[in-house]
Length: 109
Image (tube, rainbow, N blue to C red; front, side, top):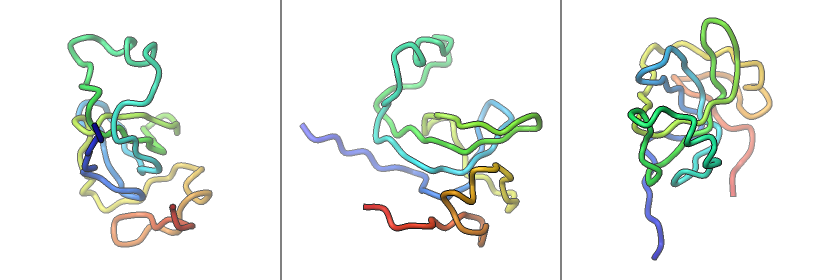
């Protein structure tokens, strides 16, 4: 059986978490959960997302720090602020912020 997952968000898009105060830029997408079971088990059971949905890798920021986040599609919203993200690793992957998103520096296969 072939998995058919349609990602709601795209590379270079600025998103925010529904429950936690951080924003980020999507730099990779897994069509379904692809992290460790330990990572998954560390999420409180009542908040654990389903594994059979897209998961996004984000260059994330909050008021205190910059980091990489791994977030299920159900926990993300498009960021409508129109504001850039200041993560220091952004220039390694993306061009300058324009029209609400970051263009990739290179073409994906």
